[in-house]
Image (cartoon, rainbow, N blue to C red):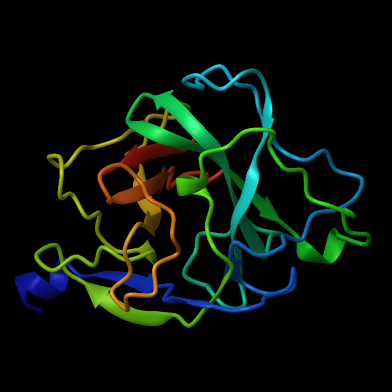
Amino acid sequence: MSIKDEHARPAVLLNPLEGDPTDADSHIGGPVLWPIDEPWPVCDGTTHDGAPGELPFVGAVQLYRRDFPELPFPDGTDVLQVFLCTVYHELPHAYGPDVRLVWRDSTTVVELIEEEPEPAVQEELYVPTVNVLEPIRYAEHPDKVSGGTKIGGWTAWWQSEPVEFRCTDCGAVQRQTLSLATHEPSGDDVEWVFGREGNLNVFTCPQDVRHPVTVHVD
């Protein structure tokens, strides 16, 4: 095996395209599978930069295990839901939206929420358009990193030097699980903008993805 192959990481380019997904689909910006008897996720506002008080998170990405088995789903879960608080935040490694991950068992959702809450204020540059996904799977090398929205792979460090993040619960070195991109290789952008037209990267703990995540905008 060559040195190049040893450094290859599996990656999935989500390749978003404008569409009309349902809560039963993997998507960006569409309706999420959320039970009526579970409180909607709320940002407490402690890291808001200018926005007042608590705000509901906005459903941004939904990924089913059947479509994306590459994700590190905990036992008993089959869908990852990614929420953004769509105002400016002063985070330890990012200035932008905050992120909440929900790993869910879709079979336990019997009755859906009637209407998803909308924040009273938000920055439109953090709100995605509605897209279906046509994934492209490939092996990514550190010398040729895609800047598109993707699962896994290498981090596109293009505005800062590479940084190693550690889990605040257990100390394990975190790994990029999901990267949301301002620009897609296809040219079909989602119309959100992170930083100086870069990527919002979500790092999770390899020991337990339910440990606190690290959000980094580059």
